[in-house]
Image (cartoon, rainbow over all chains, first blue to last red; front, side, top):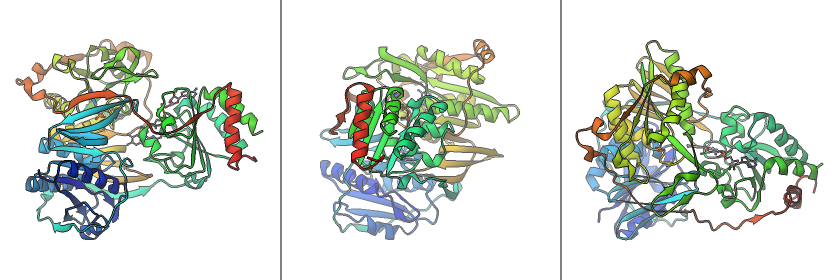
Length: 316
Length: 262
Ligand SMILES: Cc1cc2nc3c(=O)[nH]c(=O)nc-3n(C[C@H](O)[C@H](O)[C@H](O)COP(=O)(O)OP(=O)(O)OC[C@H]3O[C@@H](n4cnc5c(N)ncnc54)[C@H](O)[C@@H]3O)c2cc1C
Ligand SMILES: Nc1ncnc2c1ncn2[C@@H]1O[C@H](COP(=O)(O)O)[C@@H](O)[C@H]1O
């Protein structure tokens, strides 16, 4: 069987720590297929980055040096060439802003199946993955022929690793500069305003369940009474009810308070990604099947408009 | 400027999803426009309003049921809608992202848009992949996770939202596909007048035979083995009782951990 090819993720000279979970997923699949696990690193100083992920279980690390920041045109060209060279059994990448930006194109260009956002991967007599649908309320077990491109959810596979001795092989590929029609100009970070939710120890976090901007008053008065900082899920920020620096989650801020109180938040994966390091999570939601309860230590199934006023009384 | 916007109807399950191994019972579903596509439509309409000689065409792969949702897009200002459906799709539990892209690509070749807008993801399938797959399929450039889009000549300046509060500023050459992230704009509501006008607008329906002489090319290479409910090894303690009793228990936890003057 030909190798499994894993695409390492990095930004501005630093390996994305979620890459280690991806490597675990890839190594597990290579073991199931009884084949080698290879890694590709595309970017600036890839040999240096290769040292950081030279872990036990990886056979070869292919490096391709480019002076540019992440660029999907270069990724697609490079990985296509490498695909034709080593004919991998499958390609694995993270299901992140990077992976979702080039993998679907790569699958079309190589004409192979695309399996997005896998939370489990198995191979017995065929390739199978688990994929969540309907806001994590249903999962689908999908099968596909090999080779396939799989994007892997961050934070699902273990990240412990032991040092390895993979051979590092620079790729000799020439890039067609004319086919590069996407250019990164700059990066910008969300400016932090008057509160930094990442350092707050008690967060009262509000989601779309609050219904209306005027109802935020209830959230702020409750937060004030208990000494909490107010944060929120994405729709509250999208609606312009709270500034972006209050948004918790994958594209917002990762928080690690002692207590995270989630009010009317369903618990989408992108939200959960930001609250995993909270010590205690308490959720109030009227939907007993809301995925937020799967991430919570304590839960109240009920109407926030009945529970919050009562909670406010407790701290008065 | 011709703008194509791919929009999808999604089902929001009320509470619990009923399903068998291979199919979902849709009876307890509420249907509506995919949240991300609300923003894609608004962006398309805003671009058309500020660019002379523009039209916005929407395309949806869906059974006839979706026409009510599609009319809402027409009511908001979409010029014309296309709905693609085929008996071949009837038997599939979902349309995989590459198949979606292949079907949409056929529509692209018939209407020749300058730009294509899609949502970042559909809340039912959650592939998060169709826009980029479509771009590759039709040979367009692309930018994903777009939270700001400015067109100037044959270039688009975009703001892309990455992880952890980091944005990327980038340039893409047109023609291009943009996958639109929520929050990019403020989606409008349809006016009464718009709703009335929508009844007169064209909603074209196409089947695979209208799109290709070889319907075989619309095969899915992904098979569903089974649906199941998510499993969890999380242990959670639920607080029962009246709202007042539930609130008191929440307060106890908070105070026990040293907050709120406890
Ligand atoms: C690339 C990408 C990045 C993203 N990044 C983020 C991110 O950083 N942060 C983020 O939060 N999301 C993010 N999202 C969006 C995410 O997918 C969800 O859409 C979002 O988290 C949903 O927010 P919500 O839970 O507030 O709303 P909903 O999912 O609409 O949930 C509302 C909840 O409120 C409950 N509710 C309603 N009324 C009441 C009531 N009266 N009492 C009690 N409960 C009630 C409902 O049962 C429901 O569970 C991202 C998505 C993508 C694709
Ligand atoms: N059935 C469909 N018909 C038309 N467009 C779709 C369909 N499904 C998805 N899309 C588009 O592709 C985007 C991403 O969806 P997905 O890749 O399924 O998560 C959506 O926001 C829509 O813009």
